[in-house]
Length: 628
Image (cartoon, rainbow, N blue to C red; front, side, top):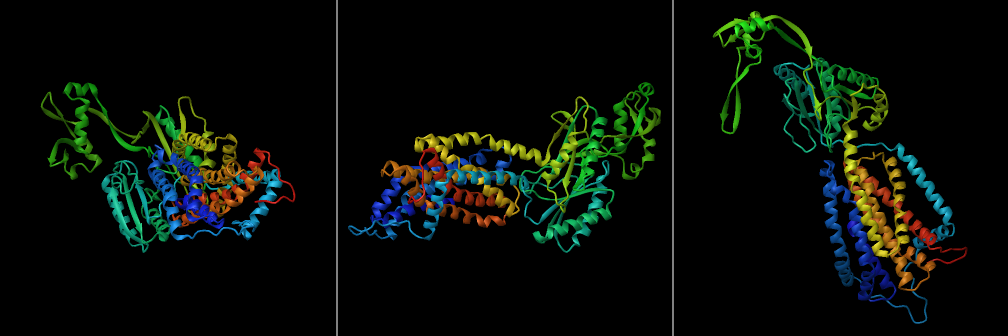
């Protein structure tokens, strides 16, 4: 729709010229000479409004950045086509206009029911301009108030009929136990009628098969199921069935099912990070945060990344006796490893593959904890083996942290949670509800709480985009000043930009769409579209006043009426061009934002620009005056 905006203005001008009796060449030459530079400026402003999208250095720019570059090239080409090919085709297809008869009434190209209705509304608004502006201000205040009821989101979930199940056994579990569990679960899941395909990985996630998929690190206790449903409508049912099967058949495991996100991915929607020096204190604080999360019925998949403590057997090393026998702590550790997990003794090279050579006892000699007392330790000084009981005073059973995560070189424990997929609350509403409670937890000196998840991703993406917004605004304002050499005219145009919020709020609430990151980009881009409409209208007022010698009173009214059709048609074509995107989960919020924002802003611009122009230039309209 945006590609034909310039062509609509040129074609409209040619048609009006022909109705006024000009030849095809005269009509084309007049409109092109009058509007080519304002249209170029308006086009550059429209492109500049999208610049923060394309210039964003954040990962979110990878998903949306191409939109800016496509518009940059296509809109500039559309301007060139509008001032060259459009007049050429008009010359071929239209006929020369018929001049008015000598002494007859001048031909009015702006007649009809729509024009008369607009004239009446415009005159009423101009006569009661303060009341008009007060009503617009009230509508703006209502839109700002209503925006608080719009759902917030970052990036939507993918419409692919695929979801991922992460499966965790207690930390320290053998990878073969993970393999056996997932094999049994996969067999059951394949029997579900809604499931088309199941892919299982053990020990880590799958290879990255799409940009937004993030693989998990390697853990023996971890596995993943990538499940494809037969169609998208069956994903929710299949996901519920899979969750039920895992709860019934593997109650000892933790599992989490989730659809694939379109945008930047995070471990969970809600993520609280607690950093500090002491491991026990970090676990205590994480427990308090988890308690808050578990108290909310809409929070699910609550856990932290240090997992549960695991049981370990820890020999008590008899240092004096071991020194007498010529055995070090390293010798003891290596002997125990040889009898359990194995010791790496070499590397096998197979072409480009490097395979470790592991030496360990046969399975029957290392599968029982009781056999640990039969371990023999080699003494390099005596050249003999001694029993483990000669260099230890006993074996203790202890619990230790299997995983100690760090962030920026600080010990950090991350508490995760997600909103219930079948619940009424989205992630941002849940986060805003839980955040004050979590931040009320008193932290000792040296500890701090930060937030990750979707909140962090959104803040980072918004910051990256808004870094370039001031530069874009400066460029757009400078173009306006360059076109009109007037601060007042520039201010008149820019005061119409906030009007888009009225339509944005209305559209998102009516269509039940969230204000997502793509909706934010649509809102930013609306400024360029609204300013373009304002430029077309103000340029005509300026031309009528400066070149044709019309009074400011007549220039305002005649320009507003003459620009009704091109401005309206440009907005309508853009709105119609966005309708196919309403069915796409990724672009639907952007489409609704632009469609309703541009629609409302266009209608209001056709009223507000003349009213503001009359106010700034002190032009008064009184009862009984004709218009246009």
